[in-house]
Image (tube, helix red, strand yellow):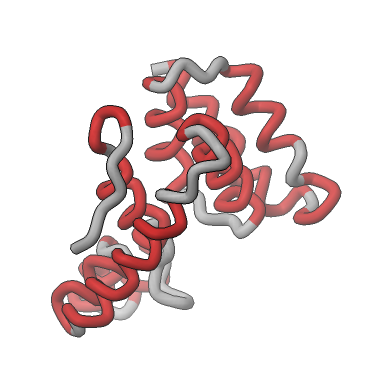
Length: 143
């Protein structure tokens, strides 16, 4: 899998996590569990985990694409992570937000910076996605 170099070497993991926060459409822990153990185990896997197992070539191509995106030089890593967290929250990707907030915290982002980035999603995405993602993001600072 391709990776971009960055302080701490985290972007190869974070690049995968960008898509990794996406679950299979319609598969939530509740709905998957209702369909038996196979559905329950699928709900626990990220999109990238499924692709790596089922279609490694596509997983590699997607990983290279994400690495190319994060390798762009204009924004620093902290800014890229703030943008990603806001976009993930706006899309309602509750699973990916805390992982990237933890990376932001490691990069020196404050609770207020993360809060403001998340609040900026309200005009475009509304309260629905933020109502799920805001508590998950703030929990990273409370841990």
